[in-house]
Every structure is written in structure tokens, then in C-alpha cells.
Length: 551
Ligand SMILES: Cc1cc2nc3c(=O)[nH]c(=O)nc-3n(C[C@H](O)[C@H](O)[C@H](O)COP(=O)(O)OP(=O)(O)OC[C@H]3O[C@@H](n4cnc5c(N)ncnc54)[C@H](O)[C@@H]3O)c2cc1C
Image 1 (cartoon, rainbow, N blue to C red):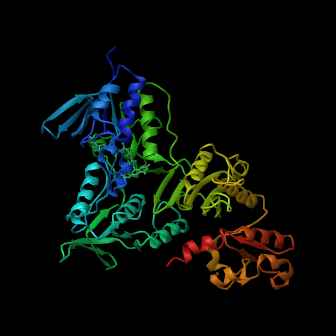
Image 2 (cartoon, rainbow, N blue to C red):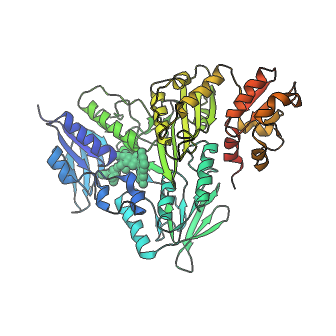
């Protein structure tokens, strides 16, 4: 029998991984890897740090070269070769060689599409002016570096406050550039719930980044001084010497569309669990495909390197006759800027509501990443979502410094294992003073959630504050209360509560708050056992302040 011939379109995260996995499974397959760009297997995730000069040497971004693919894996790589059409009947692919200018054809037994997603570049007036960039590959990052090195820009506008925009804000600032972020949504990092994104907002402002939220770009023009002027829809005007467009990415589906492959409602290539498209001999992986969310069961576009790599292995397995299956995504993501780490996994409250899933409860907590007495303790702001019915963990978001990614990874694994908050309470996690606490933030999240499900405490959501007629009780110390408090609340410090209970209404619900929810929980237990009807304001003043006290 003739050797299987596999052609792979796109030679970076998904394509390169698929090619090498295929080789490990089938020593005899003919494997051809095409990329229209000058490189394969480069680190797109490292590009912001190359612009910021944290990574000095461009060659460090190249994880493997065509020569290495040939020598180590016997895989033929053709860079600057673009797949331009698929003939599904004939099992051939038309290719344009950008170096020689010639068009030619290759046959395939199996075809893998991993063309990725392109930065969205809306047709705004002036969007093609020099000094306006997008960032997807090494040539893009080189152009931005060259612009910085030769023009010494003083001001940059980043359009889009998502993960790439924020990473780039830090990296441009580290080059001495004053950064403004313009974001159409009312919050940064749109996948997060707004109150969690509030921490990122505060942090960026404290690092001198100017933010304009809830306003979009209308267009660009040259300024008299030779720079750029950015106009927003609401009429704001910014001067900039450099503009980065980071408003999201769109799956590259032209090849698939032209070939009549099924495209899903979200605009990505539709695949089955083995990453097979609507054609049994064509497979698709990475940013170009739609994936099912494991919690909401909705189709989504999740342009992340982890899923692309996992899908690549699954497609290779399936091509080689193995029974591997992609189970969907949790969207587990982490991003860091100016020393802040933001991470999330599973469903957010927004995503649950969008999917019509209302049987959920949230808890907020703000534990330190390690014991308070060990130097360098800093809070992790954590939000956990779980199913009311049985405590199944649905999602988590965390913001803080060190230790954030570790907790989200534990919770991501917990969600994949379909664990409940009762399991989190009892999870055995490593501890020493410099790393955590005997009750790790993950345990604490489970304990708080389990307390709620057992009926030990009832929570009041912070976003119902403006509608409530409840009596608001603040159990912090007077100096904390005087510094800032929820308007209309009464201060009785926890230590005085037992002796001053008569000051509280017997026939009106009492909502208790403190700094982070812990003292309020103790107060709730005291008051509940004394016959009061009480609720703990979820996440305490810290959660409230994250949204309501931003300058
Ligand atoms: C600046 C930046 C930072 C990122 N940071 C992170 C991060 O920190 N964490 C994370 O999880 N993800 C991150 N990502 C996303 C991650 O890089 C992608 O999810 C991942 O690379 C997707 O892999 P892919 O194979 O689908 O596409 P890509 O890696 O984009 O590769 C697609 C390749 O296909 C080529 N191609 C397209 N069409 C054709 C054609 N017709 N013929 C030939 N070649 C073609 C393209 O030139 C491209 O080289 C980042 C992305 C960027 C741009």
C-alpha cells in the first residue's frame, strides 16, 4: 500500500504540532507543511515581549526551522507557499509560491487546515496610514520595533483592551511610550465579568496608562506634527506616534469556504470531535475552528495556543486511525501586565447568562497568595461560580500577583474532573509559608461556597445593592469605615456586635459587609443564631470598590 500523503496548511502552533505528531505515529507518511509566511513554528505568544525588548534576539522566537523539520522529522516544509484553492474531488490543493511567483498543485490523501486567525482591521478612514500596526507574526513585530527604534514615539494608542492590547500596553510603556487604550466595551478584557475587570482597570491607571472605555475609534488622520490623530465615535481626539489595532481576530476561513466546507454560526470552520470537517479527508484545527464550550455547550471561537496544540494531536491521531476526541474548551487563559496577573477558566457569569443557565451562584474572596506573616503577601481576588443544585464548579476568575495562575490551573483541572465545591473544600494542596496557606485560596473558595450551599450563610450580590431595602451593616473598624463606606450603612465593629445587637432591626433583612467578607461571615453567624434575618454582602467592600470606586 502506498504511503499516506498528508498536506498541512499553516505551520505554526496547530500545523507544526500536527505534523510532528503525525510523524511520531507514522514513520512512512509523506508530510508536507506549507506556510505563506517566511517562518514556521514561531512563538506568536512571545511577540509582545520582542516588541518590548524583553526578548532581544528575534531568533529566540523561532522554535524550529525548516531544516530541523527535515532533519529530525523528515517533514518537508515550504515557507512563502500559500494554499489558494482546494479541489475536494481530485484531492489536490493549488499553491502559490510567493518567491518564484508560480502556481502549482499538490495531491493529498488527508489535508489539515491550520491557517489561524487574522487580526481584525475595520475599514476606518485612515487605517492604512503609516504608524498603524497589527501584531500577528514576526514581520509584524519587526515593523513595530523598527518604528520604535527609528521614530522614538512618545505616545501610543492601543485600540482594544483585550489580552494582546494589555500585554502590548506594558511592553510599549517599557520602551518609554505613554500609552492610551481605547476600548469600545465598558470594561477591559471583555471575557471577564465586569467587576473582575475593574481590578485591571485600577492597576493600569495606577501605572500611568490612560483608558477610554465605552467608546470606539472612528478614524485616523495625519497630524500637523507628522504623527497621527485618533478620532473616537464620541468625539474624543488623541495624538499618537504609534497606533496598535488589537480589536480581536477573525478565523481564516477563505480556503474552507471556497471549498464548500461547513462554516459554523460563529464564523469558524465546523469540525467534529476528531477535528474532521464536513469533508471526511479534510481536518481543521486551531484558531480557524469553532469549539464547543464544555460548560455552556455553546459553539465559540477560542483563539488560544493550548487548544490549538491539543486539537493538532487529536487530528494527527485520527488521521492515523486512533480514537482520540476533543472534548471542547474551558477557555482557560492567563495574562500579565505591570505585575498584575489576570486568569480565568470555565464559564463567567456573563457566559452563563448568555447561554440561559441561571442555576448558578457566585462567591468572591480575597485571600493572600500565601500566609500573611510571610513577607510579600498580596491578595488574590477570586470569583468562583458553581451550580446551586449540586455545587458543581462552573468557572473561576482571579486577579492578583504571583499565585493567580496556579489557582486557576487547579480550578481548571477541577472543572475538567467535574468536581464540586465540596471537593474543593477538601482538596489537598501543597503548602509552605512562602507558597500558600494551610487553607489554600482554592480550599477557601470551596469552603465559602459550601457554606452557602449548606445554608450556613446567605449571600447578597453586590450588584443588587442599589435596589435593596435591607438594613446595611458594616462590621469593619471605625477607621476603615471612615475611610470609605457604602452610603447609608451603619458601622458596628464586629467586636461590639454582641453588645449592640439592639441597634439592629428585627423585622428587616440585614446585609452585612466588611473588607473581604470574612468578618461579615462571623457577624452573620452571630446574628443568624440570634434570630436576625441576615445576608453577607458577597466579596465585601473590596468587590464593591472594584466596580464602584474606580476613578
Ligand atoms: C501577539 C499574540 C500573542 C498571543 N499570546 C497568547 C498567549 O499568551 N497564550 C495563548 O494561549 N495564545 C496566545 N496567542 C494565540 C495563539 O498564538 C494562537 O491561538 C495559536 O497560534 C493558533 O494556532 P494556529 O495554528 O491556529 O494559527 P497560527 O499559529 O496563527 O498559524 C497559522 C499560520 O497559517 C498560515 N496560513 C494561513 N493561511 C494560509 C494559507 N492559505 N497557506 C499557507 N499558510 C497559511 C499563517 O501565515 C500562519 O503562519 C497569541 C497570539 C498573538 C498574535
